[in-house]
Length: 347
Image 1 (cartoon, one colour):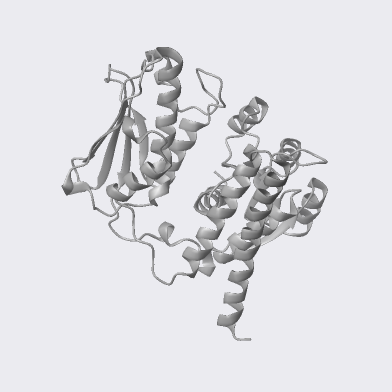
Image 2 (tube, rainbow, N blue to C red):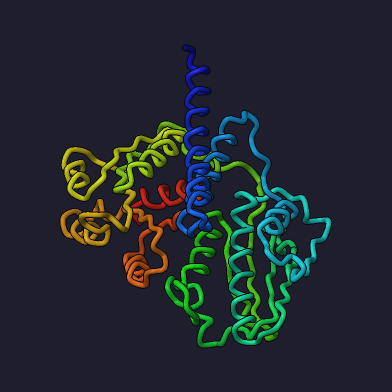
């Protein structure tokens, strides 16, 4: 079999495997006459996004860079109440190519919208009105999206804390704004709060214009950037998914299904980054990280956490205290790529 046919067979295998998981989840739910659980919904979405990424990889043409127009289209596809939006999008900035992908930026805007809805519904019992104003900065090298709402606003005391992981004024994990700012900054942009706005809350999302392709945007196809990854998760299916993803970028992955197995691998080999699930069956990822920090702080400084347990305040506080990069399941392939890059830097 030729190399091309082997690649096609591998692609078809991965697509069928992910499609099988989606269909199986729906079949089980239908047989039980029950709606999908949040966990199953997350697994369906994760498999669907993985299939999309596989199809994108199979397409020889490079995907088009996002624009203000495609970001709005992506947001409207996700937004539950588009009638609440008031949009100002001038023609002169509607189609300028930007860095990242449309979903990267629309997810940030969606998260801001969810927060605004929650505050307005809980405190004012009114109708949310959300404004989106698109414009260029003075240097015209970045698009700025001004997101405003008619909610109760943010007190001056809270201004300096709103982007801190775990900080919240209501019952939630407090990871939304922190994660959104991190995504923006990882892509060269930023998310800030306008302290002068008095009629609700106003956030400013800056998105760099795409001037030229940088080495960071090209991914990890260059063999000199290949990473040696140790992935620790007691879910073998998840480890297999990780391996399929990182192989696309030329990395190597060593799987470990337990903390004991991971420590054994660390004795034998060196790794550029350690991808660690917070919840492990025999020894938790938290305990593993604490032991690793005592035994080998250099390797501990390369840990990237993954968790689906974002509702646990213990997990939130732990992630906040470590200061290490983390992924909230389900996540997209580009999220994993950025986290591995950050983790391998040891910062």
